[in-house]
Length: 211
Image (cartoon, rainbow, N blue to C red):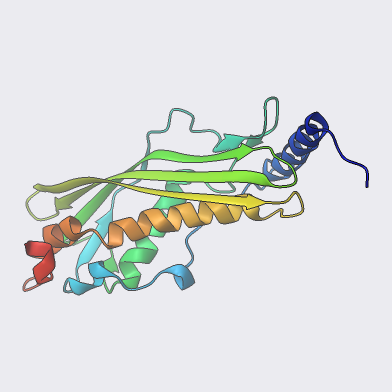
């Protein structure tokens, strides 16, 4: 059996990363999302049904054009839809799954979200490549009737995965999971539940959330 020197193995890993990232950075980009099938009713669903508006999501990333790049000199990695749209749709999906209505008028509460981070690191290796996806969202909750700011929180999700060069969907799957973990972090936040609990005319947070 012929052994491949360490330097050659690393070189092969870099080549694989460049090829994969080149596919990711096509005109279509990565189709990242949070499908309804992935959403489960969580603590947010313990609040009586509310009418919730979502303000246009603000992109606060330093680099709002791409979500990552391959190894040094590799192609940029982009998404098929704007990142704020991806986050907005994920929030809407989670709100609906937990029994609330997403509305544009006559809301009980307004969610104002900002994207702080939406990034994919690809670390070359051999035989596998390391993918690290990170998503961070800052969220403010406002009483739509009074304009009072009820809560300001930051939610974060990360996903690490190793995959071979023959796994073209690895990058998308890693970012899908990082986004899902961020949204789950939001939906299970007791402070968020407590902030929303009094807005629905009888809604109440679980006892554990009020302690």
